[in-house]
Image 1: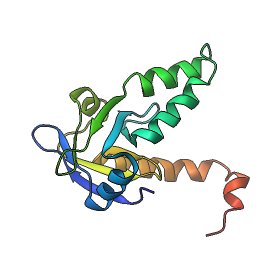
Image 2 (image 1 turned 180 degrees about the horizontal axis):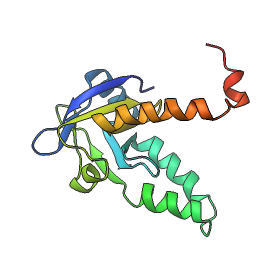
Image 3 (image 1 turned 90 degrees about the vertical axis):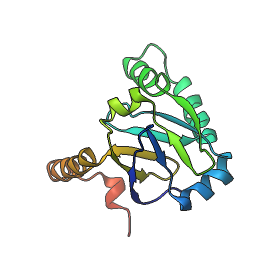
Length: 150
C-alpha cells in the first residue's frame, strides 16, 4: 500500500525520484514498471504499478463505450497513459504534456492513494485540500463514512 505525502523536486530533465520506502514496494509489485497518466477530473497526474493499471484498464474497457462518462474517462485516463520504469536510482520521467496538464514546475507533492499515487503541483495540492474542506461542510456525509470507525 502506498501511503503518505512527500515533497519531491523535479529536476531539469523533468524527472522525480520516488521515495526509497516506496521504491522497495514498486520493485516487489511490478519490478519498477509503472503507468503514468492524467487524472480525469483533477489537475494532477496518477501513477500506477503496471498490474494495478492493467486491472483498471480492464474495468474501464468493460464500461459501455457509448456512454459519455465512459468516453471521457477512457480518453483522458487511458488516452494519456504512458508506461514508465523507475531508473537505477528510482526516478521516473514526467513527459512535458503531463507536466503542463498538472502545472508542475520545480516542486511536486506525491500522495499515496493505496494502490496508486497522485502527483500534484505543491500550490494546487494545498488549494485542493482547502477546496475539499469547504465542500465537505456543504455536503452531507454519506452513510458509508458515518459507519466507519477510526
